[in-house]
Image (cartoon, rainbow, N blue to C red):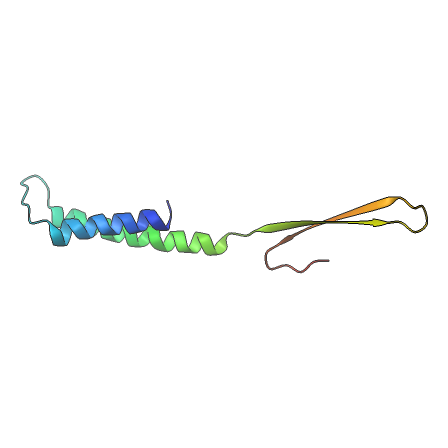
Length: 86
């Protein structure tokens, strides 16, 4: 459930409220449309918040040669998006 789902719910609700002029005895389509529009707005906002909170990690591997032994030495560091490398 993300941004697209929120938009779809909002659009379906708007169609039910503003585009359809159908009267059904057992359900009020305007109320269902308003509920879908509200749910779509909530899902859209939650999708935006979740997207902004997503953290990406980068893994960097550096290989050098130890001057004393001549052996290759690998150093691996992992960081989040806003962290600085050590």
